[in-house]
Every structure is written in C-alpha cells, then in structure tokens.
Image 1: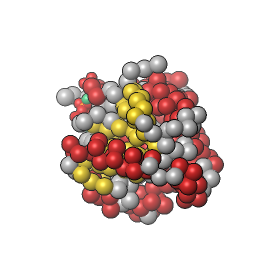
Image 2 (image 1 turned 180 degrees about the vertical axis):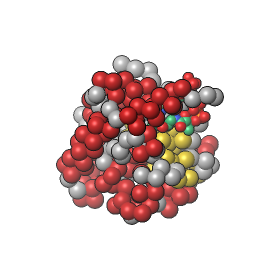
Image 3 (image 1 turned 135 degrees about the horizontal axis):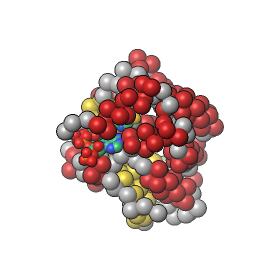
Image 4 (image 1 turned 90 degrees about the vertical axis):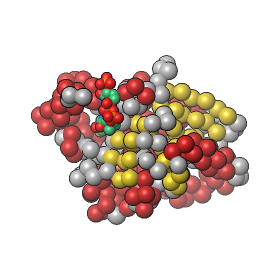
Length: 249
Ligand code: COA
C-alpha cells in the first residue's frame, strides 16, 4: 500500500492519481504496483466502465524515479512492478483516459500511448529522454509511436529526445484535446463519463477490434525490457543517473 497513488471510484469512472508532487510524480516501484493493482482490479468490477489516469495540478509524471534506476543498475534488474504495470496497461480491457498537466516525461509520456483519449493542458510538455540517459524506449513505445506519428517524428521524440508541446502532441496524435490548464481535469472527467455512458459491451468489442491482440504489445514490452536491463548496467546510463542526482539547483 502507498499513499503516493490515490485510487477513487465515482460511479462508473475510476481515477488513478499519481500523488508525489514534491518529486514531480516520479514513479517508484510501490507506485507502479499500486497503479497495476488499480487497473487489474477494475476488470473484476462490472460497474467500472472507464479508467482515468491523472497527476498533480503542476505535473503529470517525471518518469521513473532516477534513484530507483541507480539502484536497479547496481542490482542489474529491471523492477518487476514496472513490467507488471506496463502489461496491465497493454491488457487493460476498460477504456483509458488521461488528464495531463505540466511535464509528462519518460513513462509519463509512453503510458499515454496506451490511452484511448488524452486531454492536455496548454502548458503540458511531453518528453522521452531515454537515449540521453543511455537507455532505450520502453512501454512498447518503439512499436506504438512510429505507428502513431510516423517514423521521423517518433525518432525525434524517442531517440533525439526532442520534447513536444501540447499542440505538437495533438498534431502527432498523442493528445485529443488541448484546454486551459485549469480545465484539464473537468474535460478529462467529462470524456470519461461520455465513454462510460455508452453501451459497455459495444465499447469493449470496438476497442478490441481497434487495438488488436495485446500479445504483440506485451511481446514488445518484454523485448524492450531486456534491452533496457542491459542498458541500465551501462557506464553511459550510470553516469547520466549520477549527474541527475548530483545536479545543482
Ligand atoms: N527521479 C527522481 N527524482 C526526480 C525525478 C525523477 N525522475 N524528477 C524530478 N525529481 C525530483 C528532483 O530531484 C527534485 O528533488 P529535490 O527537491 O529533493 O531536489 C524534485 O523532484 C523537483 O524536481 P526539479 O527538477 O527541481 O523540478 P523542475 O520543475 O525544475 O523540473 C522536470 C521538472 C520533470 C523537468 C525535471 O525534474 C526532470 O527533468 N526530471 C527528470 C526526468 C527524467 O529524466 N525522467 C526519467 C525518464 S526515463
């Protein structure tokens, strides 16, 4: 149990809120566990028809906790809860909506590639600095991003580490709607309620047809995780993590 992820059900909508604002919602292993639990347990609740992933008013998620990366680099293992969370996203059978304010970094951006509807504030920023950290893309983003936005734009995002602002993310197909930052949560909840009001079996069947089998996505998550694990142990990655942890304010 962690209070760094808040899960609340309001009628047919479950909100999963990352709640570590002092660390910009950087995700720790217990946070991944809590998010995976919230997604997986929703499958057993017939009344839950839509899941909403949210962050804090000033930040969506700063990616994996870099201190945890350093620890994993020492131990040489990619935390099992991370892979479990990514599998839960890929296999989730309820529509996923996201409400993004502020920075969405690393997995903060790649988790959105599993969402069905994304609302972003006009000041949101999306970045995946994997390669700059000596790492490789994760969450099946190496498969989904080129399909979503084409190879060249995916390369700029995933390999060159060029961030997208909210309008660019919308043009790239990552975001549906850009609204004023203070309107993000209401707009996302409205979308979630709209989805929840549709005939649930028809939504589920349509979504399955559109997304195809999750097995391909899960296989890519596992393939990336192997490469990621190897990169975590690299001198390039260790130097980048240590530089982040030691940086001057
Ligand atoms: N892991 C661990 N701690 C993190 C973190 C992360 N991914 N992101 C932010 N934090 C911590 C900072 O160390 C700082 O902690 P401190 O107050 O104890 O020193 C606190 O969160 C605030 O971060 P700060 O960088 O001062 O906030 P900012 O508003 O200036 O910048 C970000 C926000 C998200 C742009 C910046 O924190 C950042 O680039 N974080 C790293 C993102 C990243 O590379 N993630 C991994 C992707 S694979």
